[in-house]
Length: 273
Image 1 (spheres, rainbow, N blue to C red):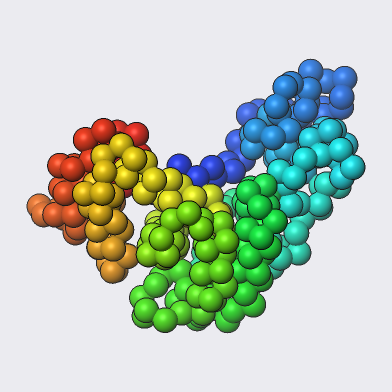
Image 2 (cartoon, one colour):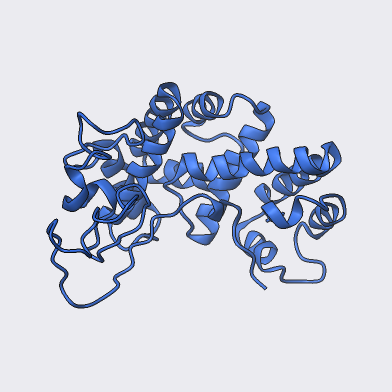
């Protein structure tokens, strides 16, 4: 059975069209975005118009989104505009790899929300993610793909990525920061997963390190690290065989078995995948 990729715990923005009927999004319409508690911060397209949270007109002027009344939970322009960096980065993704998101606009929404989450953690975290995304957006396609694939050891924007992970996850060792960033990139490149959400994917992986260590101790944490180290070195066909548990043994089977054996309390909570 195919397991969820490790970064799926990070929140991916999925645009779900709930009805083919046009929905009116006025404040008088009970189905409009922002009419229910928490609808402007839940990352859900509540009214089915293809716009999520603060980019929806029903939320844009509300207290969660207004420039003078909102909180620091978003780095996106509060008038519904998009970050130029996210627009450039999403354009690069569609140009150089292949589109996972339904449109560049949908990708930009996910990128902007990821930036908002990083900024909510700290100003430095948000700023370093912005520098990292700017670096990626400026790459030639061959360098952009190499960055995602992690095939050659050295790749562009590593310095900016290291500064981002150090600023956002400074309570964990640099080894874990690197492994999480590397495995997020490899997962995105090989499975067309959410390759834009750098902060949330890395945070999900870091949280797994925290949980395995706190519930099952160092032996479990080390086993989880071993699985990350193994999968980063796989080609995409090998990575997908690991993800599907295809083969007997399948790639990194031994490392997975270590996690199954040692991570008794945390395994079901974080999933060794």
